[in-house]
Length: 257
Length: 253
Image (tube, each protein chain N blue to C red):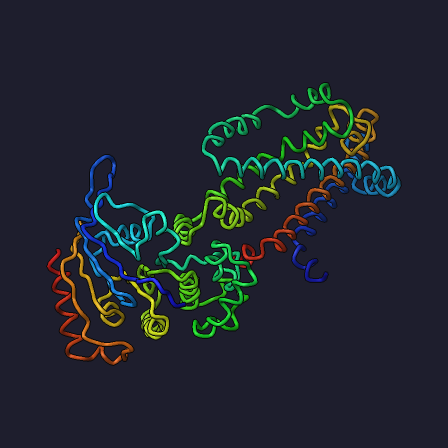
């Protein structure tokens, strides 16, 4: 899954206002972001800070009122289908087996079924899905569904992967297992990732830098660098620098209210 | 087989109860058989007139199945058109609903005048009466798709035609089958009405002809055969749903 194109992503002065019952509601008020190739970025913010709107715009589902988005030189129209967007729910299609769910993106891009199967085959092992290729989604555990959904998103080789609270539906143990698994996996594939979460531990554990947003209208409040290189160990959660960074970010978030 | 009998034993129990009470009532009250034949005399009629009843059954079954397939094809095409275009929805949906408010008993004789006396008007009556639940259910199914799945398809680069074929059609199948179950039950009624209005064969014709001749046993024989057709076709559709839409059944159980 190597990409030759430069994955540098930059977003500048993003503004978006929506209208609810005719009243303007300012959602995003000048959001700036920049992401290096293979970097993992987290966006943290209180609920209603416009994280979903930001993701929709980045994915190409919505257009900003103002501002520039540059994703490897793609314009708005070609962003759809080039940006991988994994939503909160796994959204596996109940009438398709795991294997057929995973190839959905390839199928849409016109890859033949036979070739798609060959392309996904090597990944079932590392995604913990081997032996379940022919199962229907309702027979899988929550973690497996999420991994299948993740594999479906990665198979389209997106320039950037947008993850919208991908672990929020899981229990604490499964969540931390999946976080560590994801960290290992991302190191292997050198994928650029933007992760939206409201879990501060998760943000520090997984990302290289963290953008903290203000509550509505959403702006970037601060950018924090995580002082750990990857691959990293679960144990960092007990480090004094981890705790320090966590309390700093939490104080930013608490100041919102 | 044993399991099947055990599973449906409540239904058999009710049938036995009704048949027994009916037989007793006729016997004790000495009701003449032209007014209300006893179950045993109906059974005897079915046994004795086996060949004649079978001939009429085949005709009615043919009308039901052909009319039902016409309804299925037209229903699915209409539902797809309604879901793909809002203009078509606004243009057609009111008329589809209105078509159900016109009593079929009024349309049936007109069809006879327009098309003639053969198989065609019966098939059309069956289709007219049974396409409605198919359209309504399929439209509901196609519109029930999760907006997040719509978003997913867009971010994967899916076009409208792909959303339709890969998402809307499969997700409408369980709904389509619910519609088909309703449709098959009422298509039996459609066939009988079609025959009542004008025909020379079929179970509906047999009923219409036997009543004035006071051969009430035959009327009841026809009713019983029609119920078996209805229940049998309903079961067949439920079985087909299990084969073609296995995920829906697995999730429900």
